[in-house]
Image 1 (cartoon, rainbow, N blue to C red):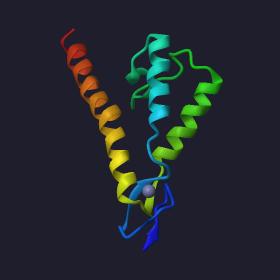
Image 2 (image 1 turned 90 degrees about the vertical axis):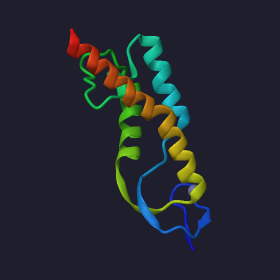
Image 3 (image 1 turned 180 degrees about the vertical axis):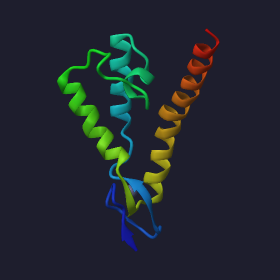
Amino acid sequence: MGNCAWCHKKTNLPAVFAAEAPLMEWMEKRIDAWCDKNNITREDLWGGESDWNKINLSPEMEMELLAYDELVASVSKQIICKECLIEDDKIYKKYYLNFDNDSEITFTIDDIK
Ligand SMILES: [Zn+2]
């Protein structure tokens, strides 16, 4: 038995490679809302190729994004319970899989131009 690194509940799942913190839906929503408000795509703000010099990011938002990125991008071997893994997967699919599809479509359109 170990303790889940994210919610600290006891679990008997083995250690897996997982991020420092789970994806947070409120933060994902914040990213989407910020993009909406500033009329940019999620890809522009949060994509692998995003260039923050080109967008008018406030220092506060930049700090929040950097902190979030550090949490969800630093991966190490740790114990995560089943509930957390399912929840994380759900948020990932909701916010990142569509996102990848979108960027592929954008890429194809840009290619044709
Ligand atoms: Zn957990």
